Image: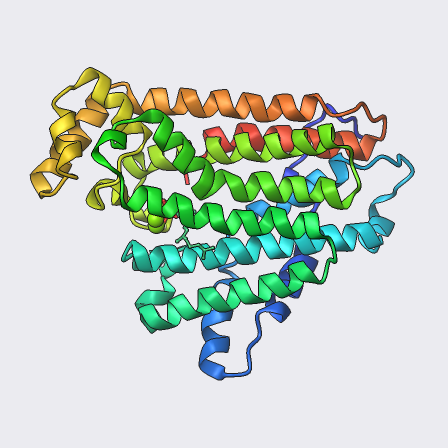
Length: 344
Ligand code: FPP
Ligand code: MG
Ligand code: MG
């Protein structure tokens, strides 16, 4: 017998179902033309599926919002609503991978998930087209749900991803050192996908608007916390521990939270920001200032604040006595804690 207070590995609660989702994903990305098939399948292959973080969160959210307490674990995997929510998990993962394929082209990244990036293996043209292909397949799957509100939510995510990327790529001088601009960009770039896909889970379940908003807020704050930690890890991690290039933001002239906080202690950072860390010396000086300052610690503190708000959203869900529902809510809370303590 287990109580809801007992710690359960969040992943293990949905591990079997994630396997089902991963298998279906592999079948959703097959293409007629061999070279496209190879490119589209690249990050769905066994061993490089990544942490499947988003699908895990979405399946746990699905159970967390269940209103009927009688559900057992097994019958729920075949439940019609559950199948539709699994589809959201699949679509979300496809959008995520598509954005990574495009991102690695934009960032000239040569590694991802510990292997060569697709652009590095097959070139930019194929990587871009493979990303487009995944978005197309995601769109077909989305339409098949026959729910226009859900289509609207996830289409808006695509708009946000592009907006966030553009905000990062072409910052006007006046916005360069602005924390609000950075947080808005971060919402678009990372948190919108989490927020809107969590909300889509609630909408498919026919949940009232206040509950859908709690789901949205969980995803939003979790996504913000996740990206803040990611931006700190860019300074504290290595290519080996991250499976992708470290110190990559500065090299691209990108200002993230650690730099913005360091700027408050080192006004000299300002001129480096303005000239986008053009030289190796600029980069080294900026890294030095970030590490000398409380920038990393303050970034973690801000991440922790968002993680707490994510936890609040779950705590404010309507009470539900079902042990399984409580375990999944507990898992979502644990995930918020894990996000701010992760090192890769
Ligand atoms: C990773 O950021 C990138 C994203 C989360 C979004 C990228 C979005 C685009 C490229 C716009 C195109 C959008 C679609 C829908 C295809 P990062 O470079 O900071 O993270 P990394 O360290 O993982 O590379
Ligand atoms: Mg990148
Ligand atoms: Mg990028």
